Each structure stands twice: as structure tokens, then as C-alpha cells.
Length: 254
Figure (cartoon, rainbow, N blue to C red):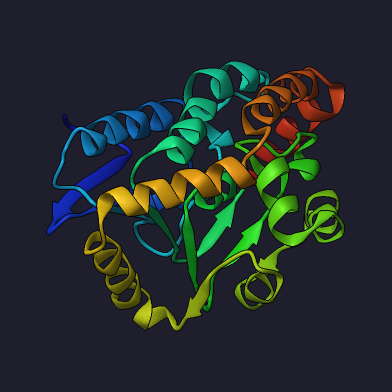
């Protein structure tokens, strides 16, 4: 099927799934999550697909949800957006039979962090960083962030990143255990391809079973946590502070 916000290419057992709104740093729209779910339907139903590369076009992996789509006096219903588009996507990624290589090629912020961390192997360019800006917008981290980040780096580091909205550099992400490897920017695509094609060459049954066992061990409570994030985000979206943050966001853009 044709996609608007993403592209999907399949070659020699490897599917390359790319966010493609480079002019918006691959910021997410309401239907981006639905397109991603449709892409997973397509990849899962293709027996030739053995591994997935997930990345962003241009200089960013993703800037999180695109707040510029809202109106200055209109607060987006983030709880509904999460329930319909992004929570199902996160669940789908973790339940997929296919190993997902998240290739963080540049800035990765907000919900895009949760999507990247829903992958199985996460690698990053030297110039990349992870950023949880939610508190500055009077929101809460979503898309699985409140489970993935603390479990990967520990509660104290996750709290600093989320409560202070401070960026995590690629080198910090490596030392904290948030990514598998960091590569020079010019080498990232070559290294990502090598990892994905290596995965595609292994027994798909073995890879799927290993992924499933690791997901069962590490993602316990994920579905409940996604529901909690949805409810908390709905509450945060109704606050005067969030409305003021939206107004400030548009004032700065102007």
C-alpha cells in the first residue's frame, strides 16, 4: 500500500522502514502510527522478510509528536492518539516475530525515543542524542518511555533525563546501556546493514524464539504501563500548564 509518512523497502530478507518527513525532523502525526502498523502487517505476512531496519530520513531519527499540527487554542487529545495509533504500534513491535534494528541516525526525541527503544538492537550515530522534552511541555513521557528508559539505564538516570529534560548524548547512551553500539555518522548505514543481514541469515525460528523469550523477561507490565501513560497523558493535556506550554510553543515559532 502507498505510505505518506514512512517508506518501506525490502531487499534480500531485510525490510528498511524509514520515517520520511525530513523537513519536520520526522515528527510524528496521528496517522503515522497507523501507517507503521500497516507496514508491520505487510512485513509480518511476507515470509521472505527476516529482519527490519528502522531509521529516519535526513538528519534525524524523529522529533516526537508534531505539536505544530495543533492550533494555539486547541489542545490535542493525546490520550486518544496514544490509544489508537502509538500504543498499538509499541505492542506490535515488541510482539513481532521479526528482529528490529533501530538505527538512530540523529536527534531522537519524545515518542520517537519510545519507538526506537521498542526495537531489539539499538545503534546510534556519534552525533545522535536522545531527548525527553515532555516535562517542559507540561506532558508526561509516553510511547513506552516510562518503562523502556528506566529498565535500560536505571531509575536514577532515567529520572534525570525525564524530570530535567536533559539530552543523552550517544556516548552517554552507550555507557548507560541504552544502545548496543555507536558508530561514526558516515559508517552508520553500512554497520546497520551488516547487522540486519546477519540477523536475516540466522534461523528465523531461533531468532523469533529468542526475541520472544527476552520480551517476556524484560517487557513484563508493558501493556499496563502503556495504559497508565495514556491515562496520565490525558490528565496532563487538560492542565492549564499544558495549554500555556502550547501557546508558548506557537509564540516562539512566530
